[in-house]
Image: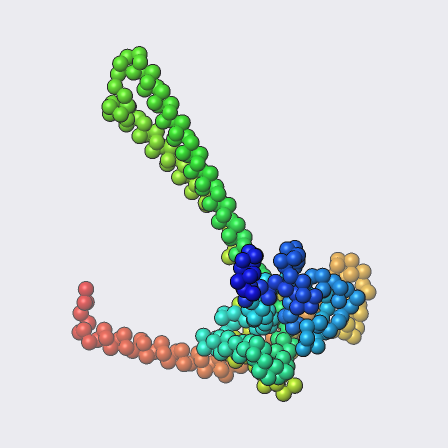
Length: 369
């Protein structure tokens, strides 16, 4: 039968032809070249787009592939990226784990701690791919995600900023390279035009005066070289100026209780900046008394009511403050300690004076000068 099919012009069936047949409706790409296959990350069973529309348009439904009872939704179907579905599944699992374990090396105190973190990621990924203790692994992953939700969002925002900075830097570099190529092209066009003009001038001079060509005349050749050198220097200066003006954009349950990331750096929050104090923290609030707003005394009553005192703008609160300062001015001053320090200083001065006298007497009273 194989020989008959080969005689009829049909080649032998390849092993990969089963990948072009929908396992649900058995449609073949040979009969329908525009057929598209979709996969769902719940089970990674492949089926054609027509079967997806027919089965899942009314709502969630179980997977139609024999032996699979998972409930699938239409919005989760997507186009297959890799030819091998095992690679497709592994990429999805690694992307999911990396979205949770998104710390960088700069977040750890030592390289060993960062490597241990990567090893824990790889263990979780391997268990999910190979189906080893999947419920416990899922609980561990969910516990870490809930415990570190704030840091995960911060690391995600930092990664987005890094990507934006890298994209801006790459775009700036491409733009600079384009400007450099444009400058080189303009320089080449200008050089070619100057050479053609020089050649025409040489031909005109040769036809009129029978002088030698610039290649034979050293003076003419020197002029051409000077023009070329000046042009190249100007082009280089222009490129350096553009490069200096270009500023690219500037450039890491029980399972929940025991699962921790070791070796992370301690995050120290910046201290709150205090308001500016022109006196440098010196307090003028009295510590020995409390100044009151009103004191009862006959003389003070006269000062409050007499027009000759009040008319001048005199404020009794200044009198209160001056009186209290004079009353408590001596507190905190200990005379005995001050006298003791004075006597100690006088003794040091006397010792120094005696030492100077002894030194002078040792020279026999002669003038050392």
